Image (tube, each protein chain N blue to C red):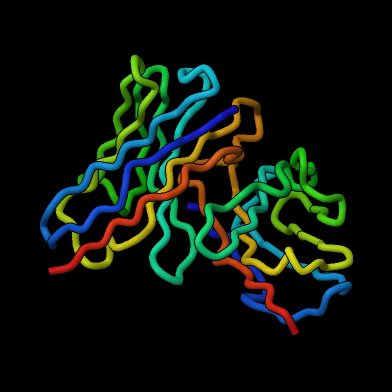
Length: 107
Length: 120
């Protein structure tokens, strides 16, 4: 199974900050890396797919980069509605493993 | 619009089985695979398995092999997930999720989730 390791597990930031979350795969997954946002009591929603493609309707302050084993999700100018938990997930093979999540909290 | 509507919350006893349904609409049912993902209280996301909505073939996470069964009924565009021999650790929200049809295989639509509580 491919293990996905996210860091940090949590962070505190202020509105307007730039936030970076990293995700590392235990083996190469090319660009089969997706990012999801989950708010309390809600189902996750996709933000970025194929490592760097922005899902329709997602604000452009979200961006993704990376390939192979190392990936990054960046949120430019953090907004109040961005406080949530973020998960990376590989779609290279089954089982479709997720990172453990990064909780972005208000400083 | 694409929708995945799941059945309601369940309370079960240890050793019971639970069957959660996921009724889909707004797209051609047989065109997309459906996955099941669960989330224990305060925990992360855990992939359980996938079903091919067209052929019905499945692939389950090793952790659930022998306890989970995923089926579909094409005439009603509904997918089912049954989990047997329930234990307290199976208390979680269970989501059905659609996989996008293209080459990237990401999860583009999620059901609202079904809370399954296992308690004696």
